[in-house]
Image (cartoon, rainbow, N blue to C red; front, side):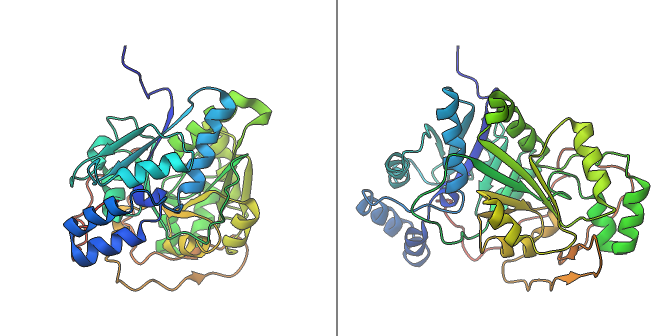
Length: 353
């Protein structure tokens, strides 16, 4: 019988999210594919340094060692062919990562293979790949440039932090705040305090982590945190939602508009997921972070950032979107919304290394 991945937590990762391939990227951008191929062969024995997602991957794979069986599966997805990917494969072995599966598509996009390989989450440095994964029902996030990573990664416990609205939960309440302001947001949340929020794209990933935690009981090596800009009185609905889902989050920070970066650093996050670029960029100065993209977030890289506007008082949230979402009143389904708009143009197609 073929082995199945359906009973495991499957993490798909691009090679550029796992390792720092800046040097090879530069060769490809300046001199093209032939020079890139020659460079990778020449440096095949040079072990790559960790990328932004490396701490998360190492921590999750260490869970398998503790369990004595495979609870987590990590799969590398790349546009490289297997020949040019040899440096990546050798670096996986040199870092002692228990990764045995990889998809190398020889110039074609990797996202069509995510669902067939039962991926629960996909992490990439490429905006288009993340949006395509989301469009096809796979939770995905765009990894930000990493902070300075030490030579060693604490794998004794893997700590994963999530924003709430538009990440664990859908963006219903975020739309109210974006379009009508803080007072309307608080009134809406108070009126719906006992009504669970609809699931966001990362609820299945949280539930997968919870299942692994249940395998270990009180000694679980996975610790989760909800780090949200919500404060009183908007916190009641969050608690009631998690209760309705039957999911426990180890730590919850209702920061009421206070910057999240220092709290995430104190938590020691191996990664933080947020939908707002301003929070991701701030967090990425101190911990690995990734942006959960929605259709409207597909903007050319050169587009200027919106200035954060923080409303005063308790429970303030940061207005950081450069576009607002349309506001349908009906509840959205848990699966991602329909097809996204055409990808923002790029000067040159990049190899997903």
